[in-house]
Length: 117
Image 1: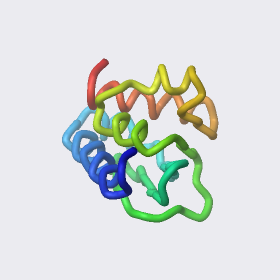
Image 2 (image 1 turned 45 degrees about the horizontal axis):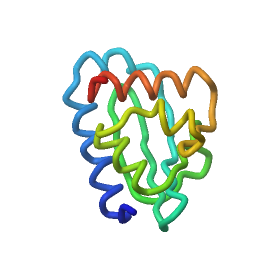
Image 3 (image 1 turned 90 degrees about the horizontal axis):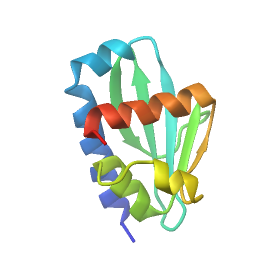
């Protein structure tokens, strides 16, 4: 089980990887989204906000997210550190994504661009 702090650190690593990638920032400059990251086994909610190509992370849940990413704390930390891809936890039901299919695919693509396969 990961702690809230470990999830926070993984999201900050994800943010850093994203914001250092100029191609991603250009590709997503018109994709403004608010994403809720929620752990199922510990008290932990974070907001990822993509606005004008920049990604920010803050603690707490947004009012009206465009996309909701829910999983156990360990999966979330591993996912945002790039230790695992979202495919297996998504297929076995450990990772639940709620939002438009386009948004889900875009988030997956961003992960691949940051961490590789």
